[in-house]
Image 1 (cartoon, rainbow, N blue to C red):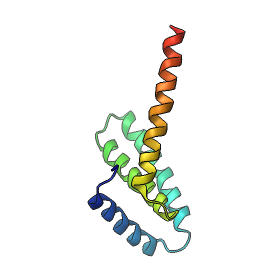
Image 2 (tube, rainbow, N blue to C red):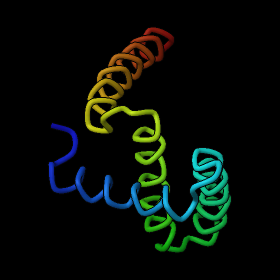
Image 3 (tube, one colour):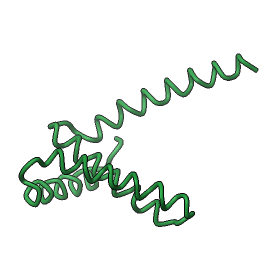
Image 4 (cartoon, one colour):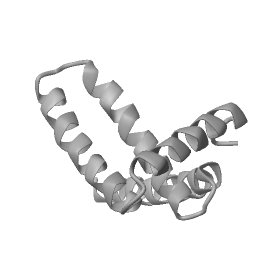
Length: 100
C-alpha cells in the first residue's frame, strides 16, 4: 500500500476543504498553486534552505488533490507510478552501462 489509510483520509479531508474554498475552477486553482510551489522550491533549493522540503511536501499534497479531483485513488496511482519509474530507470541504467 503506497499510502496508509490514515494519510489517505487526511488527504481526502484536505481536498474537501480545498474544494469548498476554491469552489470555482478548483482544478485550475490546484494547478496554479502547484506552479507557484515549483517556483518557490527552486528558489529555496538554490539558497540551500531546508524549507524547500516542506514546500515539496505541500506540492505532493497538491498533486494528490489533483488525483482525487479526477476521481482516482492516490495510493493506486502511486503504485502504478512506482512500477513505471522502476522499469524506466532500470532501462536507462542498462543503456548507460552499455555505453561504458
